[in-house]
Structure formats: structure tokens, C-alpha cells
Image 1 (cartoon, rainbow, N blue to C red):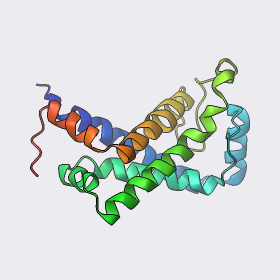
Image 2: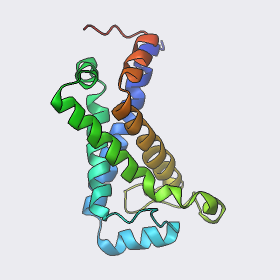
Image 3: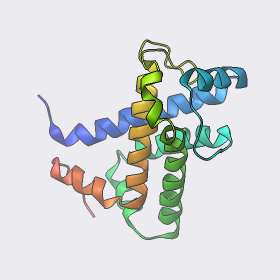
Image 4: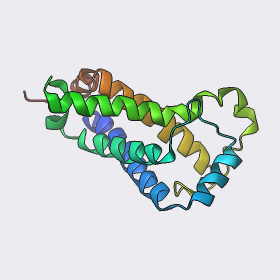
Length: 167
């Protein structure tokens, strides 16, 4: 039987695992493999940022999404304590790092073969590049940005889906 209160938790869990896995795979990939992937995908970031920040962004936001499954962590993010503000600011900055390579390439979408595998992030199946771009860069970046700016939204979605969050 389908229970809708686990819907957001499942989305956060899958997104967190995918980002964390790809962050680890990118950290293990060689520089030549990353350069080849960027060349094949025809990606140039809007603002040049060292690639290590992309790896940190994937691992950090993936970890935050996995922790967000817990209602207690969401309540921690809502509070205006020094630690929660720092975590939220990091999520916003690192989400921009995740979306940054995608902005300049919106006009060139027709020239990219999304059915190719994304080797550097470890998605070695046909369509891996599509999963990497849509779920990791766009969805992960937008969810991280939203969670950093307004974490109450995710708590309200959880309550609307049937979770009982105790304050």
C-alpha cells in the first residue's frame, strides 16, 4: 500500500544518495576523464570555479538531503541559530556551484547527446548524462537552494503529505 507521507523522504533520499555517489565518483575520477566529459558535454561554466568546489557541492548537498529525511534535522534548519544559518548559507552557495555550468548551455541543448553515459560521475548507462544533468545539477541545485533559503517549505510539504512533525 502506498503511503504518501514517505514521498518527500524518498525524493530526498534518492537525490541525496545520487549526489553523494556522484561526488565520490568525481573525486576518484582523473583530470583527463573530467576534461573529456566536459568537452563531450560542451559545457563551459558561466563563472569559472575550480572543479573541487563541484565535488564539495555534490557531497555536501547530498549529505544534507540525506539528513533532511529526519524531521529533527529539518527543525534544526528552521531555527535561526548560528550553525543552521551557516549550513543554509553553504547550501545556497554550493547549489549555485551545481547550477553554474548549466546556465550558459541552455541555448545549446539540441547539440548535447543526453543518451550518452556520464562516465566521470559514475553513471555508466545509456541516458546517464540526462540523469546527471536533470537530477543532479538542476533538481539538486534547485532543492538545495530552496532548502537553504526557505527550509520551512520542505517542512510544510512533509506536513501536507501526512508526516507528523513534533516541535
